[in-house]
Image (cartoon, rainbow, N blue to C red; front, side):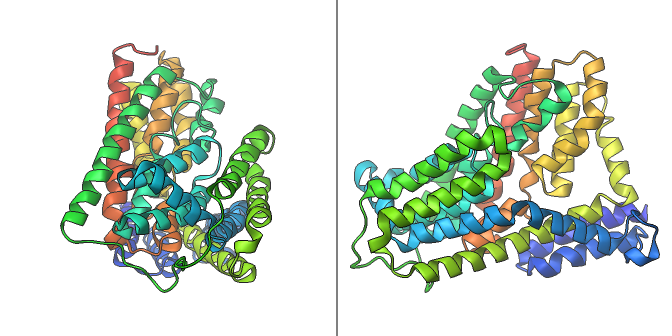
Length: 439
């Protein structure tokens, strides 16, 4: 009982402190300690046998494993964003979009850029780094409140693209191992759900921003924003080419190198930005330095939350919760959706929700005769719903580290578009599969 109170209370405390703006490098281990103490978890590795769970060992294992896996991608992604910003390439592209499409389409240009990169295989974290310079320029040009930039980036990255059929993102690939399906599993329903999320989410985003503008909100510049007044900008084509380079290289090497393809792709993006726009740079050294510092802050914040998940998964209450979630009676599609969503919410990770639930769900549900393609798509979509609670690593990185916003100002729109919209899309998918579509 105490362990469950610790698990639920620790998660609630982490969300509360995140929303209050506490530094996550403090909030993460503090909340993990709360979970560990109430669960009777030994504090130090020296107090347990080799390989046994303990607070420091499990927290630092989760923290360090994330840094090990993602540091180079975060570093190159942040540097790529900074060189696009410093050279004026991002501003050039944004001005061209506004000139061609008009201010009313500025928001959707950002969403489209994120969607193309995400569906092209670029990591969600890196997409936010890469597109942010263009987003800040477009919002400034259109005089829109900047607190909606995180929601715009997230909507284009983690909703109708991340979990759709054919997506190279890991959230669409994990079920293949357990269900024997393909990345295109349930594509008919997936296409309908993706179109729904895109249209409904786009309308909602536009409505939220229009309401804020009507209430007098405008773009407010900051000291660390790139200064573009009276500065000669490169041609829009030389601003677009580096983005295309990243997309093409990541697509070519994705099957062979998986996420490591991003190292080559982002390096190609940085080099191509420099070669094409080198005469427009204000200070290459400063861009590299700021990109490096931004990457360290971003990966540190995210790893702090991942470390919390490492402790949460080690306590007895977590296994009790998993057993309960994976034993829900009734429709396998509904049970699978609830299980993956809740576990993803507890761990703050869409891929974590799938990786924990599927080994338990898949054999049981396959034996009952559930269509594996339908289960694949439902599980994929459900993993992208409650995972985006305030403590999610992507949310924390995008809101705080990349966009420099507070959860209090920015998370309302982020939550609406990345939790509510995908949840409605999930319900739609279950209904369509239950009616026999795509089966």
